[in-house]
Amino acid sequence: MIRPHFPTRFLQWGTPMRERTSGRTVGGFRNLFLQGPAVTLLLLWMLVPLGMTLWFSFQRYNLINPMISGFAGWDNYTYLLTDPALWTAMGNTLLLVGWVLAISVIGGTLLAVLFQQEFFGRGIARLLVIAPFFVMPTVGALVWKNMLMHPVNGVFAWLSNLLGLPVIDWFSSMPLTSIIIIVSWQWMPFALLILLTAIQSLDDDQVEAARMDGAGPLAIFWFITLPHLKRAISVVIMIEMIFLLTIFAEIFVTTSGGPGLASTNLAYFIYIRALLDFDVGGASAGGVIAIILANIVAIFLIRTVAKNLET
Amino acid sequence: MNPTMTKKLLLTLLAWGIALIVFFPIFWMVLTGFKTEGEAVATPPSLFFEPTLAGYNEVMARADYLKFALNSIVISFGSTLLALIVAIPSAYSMAFLPTKRTQGTLLWMLSTKMLPPVGVLMPVYLLFRDMGLLDSQLGLTIVYMLMNLPIVVWMLYTFFKDIPKDILEAGRMDGAGTLQEVLYLLLPLTLPGIASTGLLSVILSWNEAFWSLNLTTSDAAPLTAFIASFSSPEGLFWAKLSAASTLAIAPILIFGWMTQKQMVRGLTFGAVK
Image (cartoon, rainbow over all chains, first blue to last red; front, top):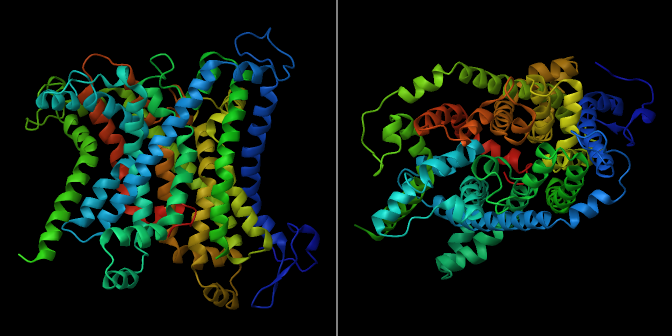
């Protein structure tokens, strides 16, 4: 064990020594030693690829054509930003994130209230309803694509026939909507899981008191439950946003971004640039844009979490 | 029947109806796995049929299925083990030797999680190519370990913080050093927390699809990639796909159900408990 007996002021992460209850001084050297590996690894994992992405984004760099090289200035960015495909991809990204967020947060909140009530077999019903979140994305997407949404043999087609409705060819007539449905199916259980936990810390006495005062269930939901869930909802929104901004596998196994660009989001667009067109410079410029977008969300998330740390 | 009873029955109907609808795709997948290929595509869909293990046999007979499964196991458990080894000392020092920097370090770790993988796809791909890590178990293990490290540190930190300092203090009075303190006091006390942290990390690695699809092709490809290979149809394949999918998600579903409570903490970085 490292127990320095010399002044460790200079070895610390810039903080003064702390006295422990035992009266023994605990140097920052010990912290450095204990936290060092994790901090170093994460620092490398963050800075090296980030720096390289930035660097590549200003380079002419093509994996299959080594003749293309040299400093590109802002060319990759101007090329990218004037490419209508990027804006289609951005639009699709926003639609995907926006709809899935709306569906999963609203649905998750309502379901959290429902599954908080007393009913028969509540424990098992809860397990069933959160299950989709644990299903790997490639499995979820392929099960929906084939067994449910298949225009001839799928369950939905059979249901439509049964009800005399027109059969929908999901992935060719509404590719993005289909993906939104699949992704919502995966993420609504996440929202539910988090909100169900948050709702359990709601003070029963407060609800009871409100009921005594004549508040109806709607008023209780609106004025007590919802404010109580406010922070949990904002955390759900931010975490989902970070994951939803870069949805990839669901698109990869269902539509491959098509038809045309109809279901290409930013992540898939960069993937096409990078590993199908081998355009490292362009893909990196796209990567920088994705990083900037994610960081806008991240700042808010970190603030919220930081607030929680202080209490 | 009194009104509260009626209300409870109605709630039961509504909640179970929704639960069954949400669970239906999984149920249907498990069911289809026990059908013959012909029955799997039958219209109207058959609910009652003679179950067969043909789909499972065919998946298992493909010599490579076990390879994919083994890759998933090695990579997700390996990365989790590495993450825990690195994270435990770090979380220990943050929980028990806090300085003014601790909070900043924690938040900074969280911020590394915000880096979208697609933003750094190119450099990681090229670095891995040059280091010969493309399509290797080691490469994916490292990526997953780094991907989950912030969450693992955070979760362990919240569990460690719940342990009264007095207990460790008492141990120290009896002459325990840091290592003994961690090994004989902290770890046994927080074992359930550490286990659920580990399980969460296994779940996240097991289900991860971006890096596994982009950094592996065949040798180190885990189950996510194997399942993705079904996206290019090959004749009748629904029963096979369902059987393979059921095998791929069953262990994770059970892990997830076991750890759901603690998972909320980890996934929300302690903001929701």
